[in-house]
Length: 238
Image (tube, rainbow, N blue to C red):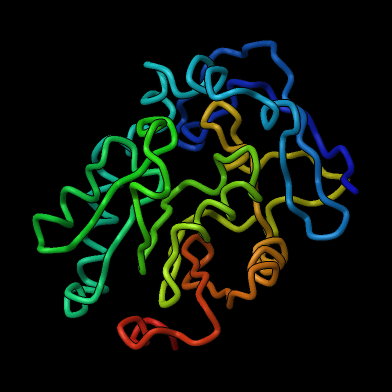
């Protein structure tokens, strides 16, 4: 069960904390909150087709509301992974899920990693069989964009090898989204495609459904892994 939480304008974006406001669109976007786990979502946008997302959100103006996605974010994430796994790269087959045009994977390959990029909007015709299995899957700034977390979970699990881990980034909503209060959190921004917002409890439930362990390195960086952590990744688990 879920309860209506609040309504925001479609043009609410993640750039507002920087003082960059888009004109009001006049389109109301309703967010609901799960009564059990505090998962927050927009059912209207979650029902959109891929074409709707490409037309209304991931269009030529998207860079206005997420200027870091083109260059800064993939470079920072690639540097982070190199620092984390440079000594283990020979043991890793990596997939960057939701990798856009593939910049992060290109940077990792330059550092000697076996890395592949896959994005549901860019690589629509590539099948799981063509991709194969990976023991390191990253999903940076992906979870909050998906209309169905169950479909995302199913896809990631199907691509994960038995000794694999999933590293992903999304901000936790704990303390930012509260019942009976207005939805003012900057991260709840439909113009950015942020339509699925997770509490710690909701991510823990997702992990339990797949018999994964779940942990967080910070409020924004997390891990799903099998109960037995592979040796090559044991140094990041404390």
